[in-house]
Length: 169
Image 1: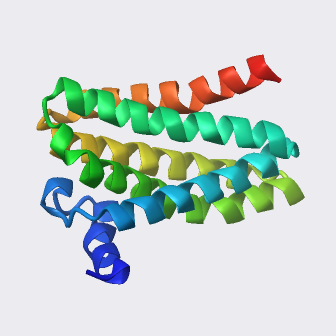
Image 2 (image 1 turned 90 degrees about the vertical axis):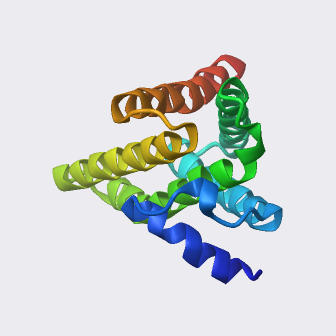
């Protein structure tokens, strides 16, 4: 199946539709999303830090933590068979939100209007809700548990990679 056809299946996740477990399992599409995720996160991180090596370290840790976190929760839930679909769904949702975040970050580097911070906050909430939706559908848990798990995901992945990156630099 072509990547465009698979993308059309996964895009409705951004509107909280479809179950990630019912979507096509494609390791090629997973790898494409992983590479896109890495490139976009690297671009955003470099834009914020102006140090490519520090950005490389933090994004590498962020990517590894994302894969490890999803693998760990699926292992605990005994649904490791869904790793490709779940990780693809999480990465795709993050990639879609990141496409909207990039112009806001560029806008923030040019000037610091308060509106840009509000929009950035809304995009963060949207990504949090999307990740919670994927976890809820994949793990068959309730809404509050999926939101809590999504918050833990963000704390461990983003704050963890930032903290380790700062300790190494």
